[in-house]
Image 1 (tube, rainbow, N blue to C red):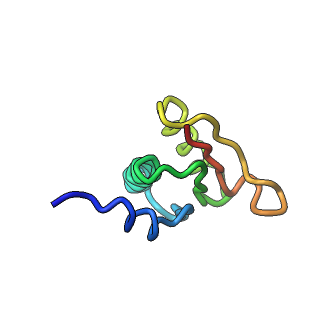
Image 2: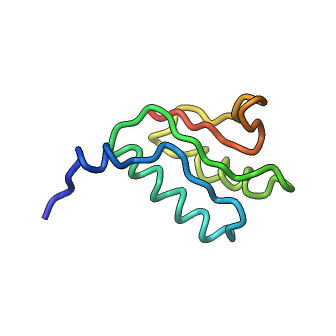
Image 3: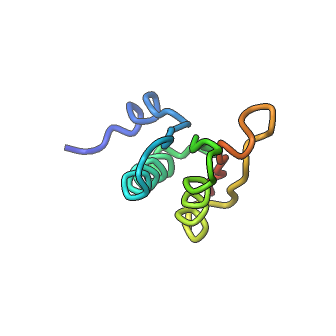
Length: 91
């Protein structure tokens, strides 16, 4: 059994939400999401973490800062969620 890339590409959602998750759960979800995004070859994804105290936002930045498949991580435009959403550009 192989991986059907065309099916994965068709069903891939460019955004996930980790709002309300514990750190270990969120890290696992982020890593799986990024792996799948790189597998299907998308250019950009979004992680919704909410604003709150900024703990999940900081965790997203820590997980993605040294990832070899990521070129940039930035906050979404203020009109579209600002600091509550991280926009990740993939290589």
